[in-house]
Amino acid sequence: MKQTNPGRFSAVSFAAGGALRARLRAAAVIGVAFAALLPAACTEKAGGPPSAAVTAVAAPGPQGSADPQSGREPWLVPSQRPGLMMRAYLVRPPGEGPFRLAVINHGSETDPGRRAALGMPTFDKLTAWFVARGYAVLLPQRPGHGQTGGPYLEDEGICEFANYTRAGNATADSVAAAIDYMTKQPFIRPDGVVALGNSAGGWGVVALASRNPPAVAAVISLSGGRGGHNGGHALHNCAPGRLVSAAGDYGRTARVPSLWLYASNDTYFPPALSRQMADAFKAAGGTLDYHLLPPVGSEGHTLAIDSTAWAPYIAAFLKP
Image 1 (cartoon, rainbow, N blue to C red):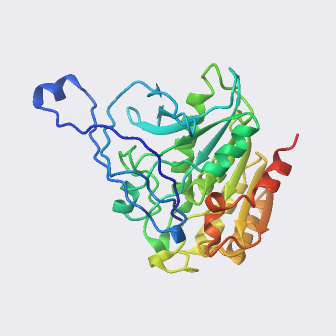
Image 2 (image 1 turned 120 degrees about the horizontal axis):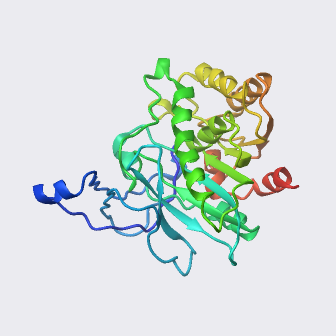
């Protein structure tokens, strides 16, 4: 359940003395080293040299110019934790807007060291697809991950008693905070938001759907779930019955149109498990369009990153 893509944020670390700490009431100094993660873990390789990052209480908004090649603008976006900003990329289509917003949310890591080493999410193929269709795309990095740093808020607990409902809701809190901030920007429409997520990020947008936020028009989960590859073993999910039960918890109140996509060779959430999750969600009353796609490379969990097999399904789902 490990997937994010790297970016090119860098910042200068500093040590604050006593006098400086007195003037900076909530300064948080977070050192992060980039590391490349295995493709089988649904990650993209971190690019560029290791860098350290500083996240202090700072004004949200753009933090520099857009990269001329990728179009990525570095932003700070408020998280659900007061004073903690999420680092993010924003990619806009040409024009002044207002644009519909698509928020693409990364996966996670159970290991703290690997979580701290995650690069900035980029999801190049998904981003390009949405920008080409007139969406502004936000790619936030949630608390407890990579250069955003801060406390990890999505812990699911001990395997046998994993609380997947709580973990997903914590992810949804981050996504909701990003949407709330961005839909107040003059170049973003206040409605029609599409919330997407990959792996743990996909599970988080399913949790978000259970809240039926007025600004969100659609939710798309790619390879969504938590607890995959327990102990580092393929096809070994931590407490899968609890994951299915949590899907039912969300489905009881979710009425936002939702699309779930999985590759048939996903070894984190294999077909039998993803179908059970979808069945539980729908049986509880959730609005859901579920599709099992053909195999993607050697590991279907990389669907959102290494493939565009999702494109016709998303196009049909979002068609007015």
